[in-house]
Image (cartoon, rainbow, N blue to C red; front, side):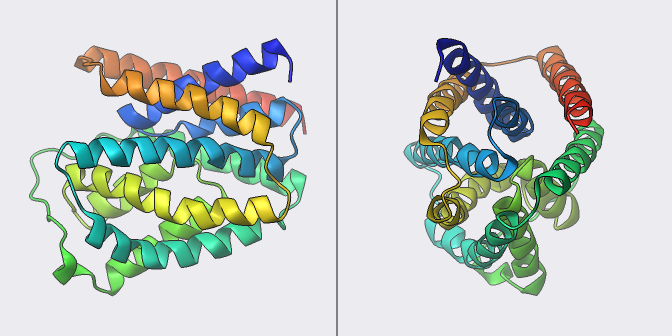
Length: 250
């Protein structure tokens, strides 16, 4: 690994960690960067998960230290998510390079559209507990797990769309449960990529250092409304450039 590659990975990881804590969509930057650096799509997909695991360990620890403890509920929600993630990761190892690039482009375009949708305001929400773990919630978690196991890009947006917009679960609780559930289902998903030889540990660990630094910075910053607007604009501009690059490389 060259110094330039290490610096690029640190920068991409830092921006990704910052975006994931502030909103979502960090993997829309890191996954293409890993592919541009020469990794095949499957190895890039597996390598990207090293930073995600470490980032979510940090986030889960911070939530617990702040008094937010949803371990029992998170574990129950994780059961269908883990099953979905195992299937999704296995399918991801079978997808060819060209097909994966098209899927990535479509996912990035769709996620960008979802990022532009205004968040609902002044609405009644449900604070999820174990009495509400019925089939709609279980199916939603299985879908999220499959998607996360397969590609993971912007899975935070999927949590918001399915749990907050559709099931009307309290957004604060969505974020708390998100980091725990992603951490739990990401472990077996990463294991599948490791077992099939699709993880570049050098790139993954450097990316993880940057990701954790970006997440730490975001957790200690307070941004005003205009700052959030500019973050969204800059992110969408970078995503547009990445989509163009992916199309040019095909």
